Length: 183
Image (cartoon, rainbow, N blue to C red; front, side, top):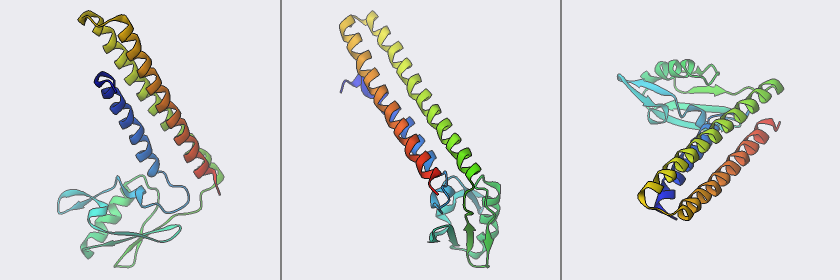
């Protein structure tokens, strides 16, 4: 692949990867430890990812269990979870923290599906903006003695790449929507 095109491929790939990572944090009625990925705990004055202060497990389909390595962290972990957008109140028995995920209602499923489509649209906009930036950069190449045919070829390659990523994003949106709507 042409190095002038490779830059835009990497940027589009990053936009797609970001979307997939974002989708992992959306829960579908089952306990998914990735919902905790963005939560940071105050660990001796330092915001630390929750995965680095305890052991996270999924003992049942709708429960996440967090066993902190230090008992003194239980209150801090609870505080961080309550302050986050997970939407679940943690409970603890003095040794471990449990998050019990309720069954999703039909309305909540539809709301999540709408959110999934919006995130997909945002990713498509990002990919199209990258394409626009690429096309503008290619037009500037004309001033550097690059032939019109070569510029046209670069633009066509960029369009094919854009189409591929848009299709991948649509597939990811459909897959995640089906997962959410499945009871």
